[in-house]
Length: 174
Image 1 (cartoon, one colour):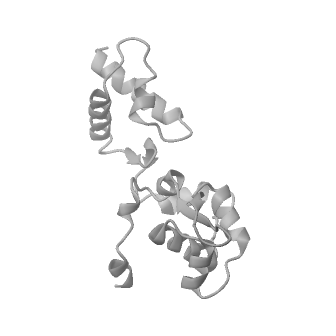
Image 2 (cartoon, rainbow, N blue to C red):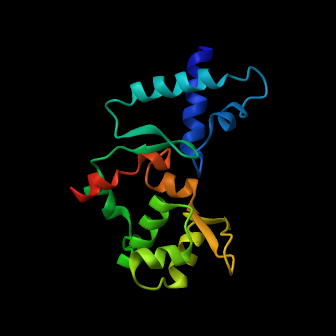
């Protein structure tokens, strides 16, 4: 087995067993000797993806690293494997999440001002529990309200590398 092929197989194996996305550094740290460069790892990922062209999965990059996932188009069948009901989010939860994503950092008061109704504290607690939102500071106003922003886990969940990948507001209204 060539060193190039062995590197590809090690990277593929690591991504298959990893519970979370792996960074280039984490992949490089798998090696004690003959540590590959980040560029070599990227080349291996490209080679692997080319070999997956006729497969149902691919390696994608999200905010916190690389992961193997099923390509789009197989949801109709795969959803039947999930014995639990799909998580459904309330309109209030989704509206709050969208406001945080687009206006971050934002306070609960800012969210209430935009939505026109008070925010149930449980909604924000749930977002923090999912690790989609975190407190990034406090606004320098009376009461020092918490400033909320999205996390890498939020980006990972929605298959984004950066918050800049959110659709533009004018795209949404169309």
